[in-house]
Image (cartoon, rainbow, N blue to C red; front, side, top):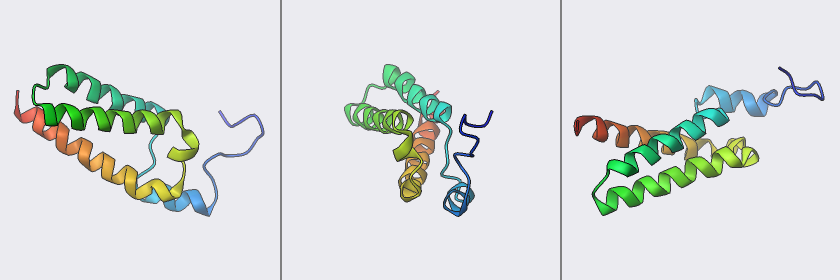
Length: 97
């Protein structure tokens, strides 16, 4: 459903580049990533791993709650780096089962 003012929140050249990079994430995706970190925290026993998961979870929640920050094209690199870190953590977790 389009916004009430009739415009498209994610349109224009600024957003086109943002979407091409793959850094764009919906709010629900950001919350889902934070929830994955929360679940991993419940089973993690290593203090360093727990600390990393807590920081990663906090970053996802910050982006989910601050849509202006999450939508800033300058955040592309940071979001891409967070996604890579999250994937690495998930890969490590998968090998532990």
